[in-house]
Image (cartoon, rainbow, N blue to C red; front, side, top):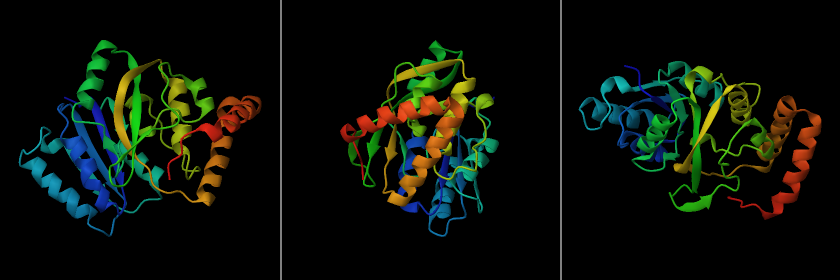
Length: 258
């Protein structure tokens, strides 16, 4: 029987942060998942750590069984190439990305999500809120873009209003990531998903902890350029310019994490 959810973790030389991610997945009260790790040929202790937990899974230390824990370690062309590999490996009904350093919010989060799915079995997307954490796991607060109670593609004119770690997508609808985008392919991906999805179901709770880390001014500028291009592609130039005008007015009043 195929699992309901494929939880996918992308990692590269993130051994110091990976264990908390592993434990947040493996300690879920629901075992209706498979765990897939895609490592980009790390040179630190990442693969040793993965093997350690693979051994614990094989010995029955966690609720999931050996067939529900799979991983690869090989060179890739960056984050989104690795995410595409994870999508190809997945067999669950839904896919959920929880990357190295990030965490599922608490041990019963998956159970909470699956209970919501039982109530709304036609859901193509399930989503909730994210708590921002620093590299020491200290809570910093919510994202300045909180997930709306009603989500559709038009919601994304205000940016990526749903944290990528807090959205589960029916695998049959999940496209591959566009590798022409180096920083903002996740925004393009969610736009494509919401173009296809029927019912998008809100889980009124935190479902992930998203670890922030520094981003250079140069990367931020490139990210903004990519997002403008993506927004124009999906919404047209007029709507894109109007949305950017509103975003610029709001920017001084938004929470910022460094």
